[in-house]
Image (tube, rainbow over all chains, first blue to last red):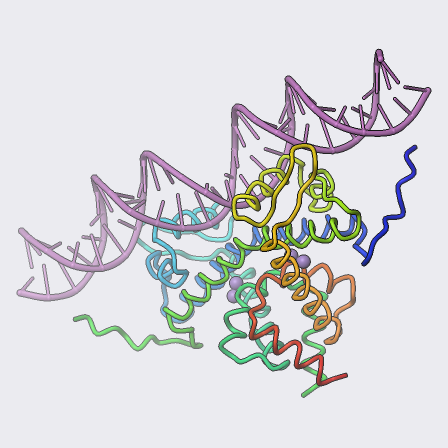
Length: 150
Length: 150
DNA sequence: GTCCGAATATAGCCTATGCTACACATCCTG
DNA sequence: CAGGATGTGTAGCATAGGCTATATTCGGAC
Ligand SMILES: [Mn+2]
Ligand SMILES: [Mn+2]
Ligand SMILES: [Mn+2]
Ligand SMILES: [Mn+2]
């Protein structure tokens, strides 16, 4: 066998399987991102206005309404939402549960960012992306940190 | 005109244009994610082993080699990398610059996470996704926070 | 009750990211 | 220097997530 070189590394790299695993998990999180954001948004619309119309969802997501329709179709396909024609979108129990989890995470991320000195506006903006990559472990650490400095 | 209702909100929602803007920026970051990770990885491979072969990149990214080929093609298309047939991948000046920026951000994010109590392994895993959503403002706040607790 | 603007549905097109399968090139090893 | 293992290139397929354009349907103003 070719005796794998000890690698003349100037600076260390992560082990190959561990690194691949990290990238895979990040990809996974990325693909769940949209559903999470939609679920949270729809829950908020239902809570504040009574109904979630496709147009409103599209406007708030910043996409064309046809795009929102497709994503909502995916929500339905995955058992997170239902919709009656010309009647708006609703969340299933699973959808509400997801929305709650996502909202809690969103808030905690913003809180943490603000606590370490990020301006509120930037915290809100960055949190929208960051939240989808925060594991339970990290979430717990955030909570502990915020608790400790109260 | 129908006199838009003041919204009988039980809890406040962000203004519509601001929220759409946040989602758009998050989508933007998401689409840059792959290029950033590839650039960083290729730079690391070049630095530690002398060359970056497509297979190694694929293995470390945890994807099929054909997938890596396509992404590397995009890197080339965007002027970040070059490649000679059967010779491996190289970074242009722009590619190296991107890699450096990305690596610095990656490290700072891990440091911050660890500083607030996230276990190192989880910090490394989550950082791989989080890093792509950290704005300059947030990055500066992280640096300041870490500085302050030294 | 009619009519018109707004909301909704649907179709078609595009790119980005994955994958598998297969063909060809390279490079060790014996 | 022959052959097999490994690396590369490429084709074909699928899904996700964007878009525009076009047709319907709804619902409120008159
Ligand atoms: Mn989000
Ligand atoms: Mn959110
Ligand atoms: Mn990353
Ligand atoms: Mn990284």
